[in-house]
Image (cartoon, rainbow, N blue to C red; front, side, top):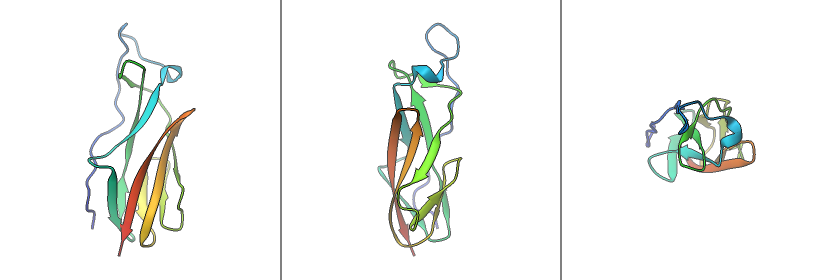
Length: 110
């Protein structure tokens, strides 16, 4: 059973000039969740969402976010940010875009 439900989606945004921002304009990547910790049960999944932001705080569109589990024995993550609990414990999930990254803590419970 999923304890924390995450909301959000990769969003399209425009920069101040009205045109689309480019990935080169990214100043920050954030994983969006309702809290710092996410809980999922073994064999269940939770979807994490990440967005890139420019220096003005505007969402940058057209980004490819790379996902990685730093604790793959506890939880795995696919290329879309879907995390699957594998064993009880804590896992760090990282979203990366170029030189920028953010990490979410995922607790996996029986």
